[in-house]
Length: 278
Image (cartoon, rainbow, N blue to C red; front, side, top):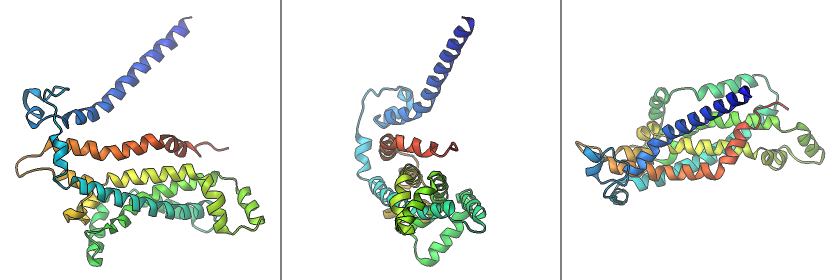
């Protein structure tokens, strides 16, 4: 009886801790949302700590139409979509090759792919900028190529795990039936690896959507700024327009939030699939 009571108390204490932890995590997002509806006079001063605005306004959201944020959102969507398609296609072929083909140095190649993703952006941004400047690729959507350097290793690693989990007998049966290696990959293996493909694509999209350093360095023209860079320019000579910044942060967060809510089951399935050996 005492043991049962102890377990209930531990469960209750753990539940309270989880609720408190979630409140701490969610509170900054709630505060940003609330601040986006406050007039500038209430963001500072005595009203700054009030959760509910006395005079809520949509002026900050209207102001977004007059600056570069909406164009930045469009650029982010274009760049993130192109990078996701490019990375997904390449990672399917590369992941399948590393999972199925036998060749000397395969483990070294996989280790090298993962090592590339560990380089800090500040180290590689200089050489990438010099290369883009020589090729005349600055201020363009060619930024998807260095973005792939960030996203491709993780996508390959996820798909290698999923391809290894697919029984090889299915490919042998397809080969006996006369299927070519390409047909086997596209019609047999790829559909079975969809959870991993979904996961890698979503992670790639979100990562590129939120990237800042490369976009700021390679695309200095306002017409090619992505959303994070456009938000960082919401300032005057002596002040930062915090109302507009919070409103822009809310608008920019909505697409990624919708993606996570719509595909959370696929994300969880993709991340956990292959975690256990059968």
